[in-house]
Length: 179
Image (cartoon, rainbow, N blue to C red):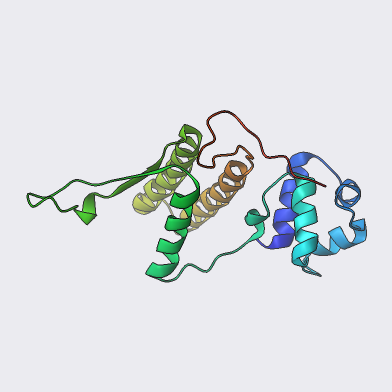
């Protein structure tokens, strides 16, 4: 999804008009419309105002290019620094961890539940791909496209959660975004 598509998606999810989003964010509604149609791209300060008005994290609008081992590890280390993660792996007879048995989870059950929901959607896609021979090419392509669209929709719904999960947070806390 483009930035504009994400703005429109979360605005519609909140059931508010472009005019209302404009009022909540302090941005002209005509500008909101241009963002949603991809005519203009919001600058970081405008994007922050929109994210705050929608009650979502600005990180939802960020696209990260993750290409290297360093990219992956830096994200994992950052996550581990800020939230309670759990890494596990079986050991060999010499006491060394076996890389093929690595498991990662979060100590927050809500995060794990949301990831399991996403995994279920991925499993449905994998099952569809594995049964490709049971469908005509046209049926398969149409079904796969619908599944991929559903996966994107599921991802966006899963992102719509402002529960705080920082280390040291032991009770239900919701992040309120300032105006």
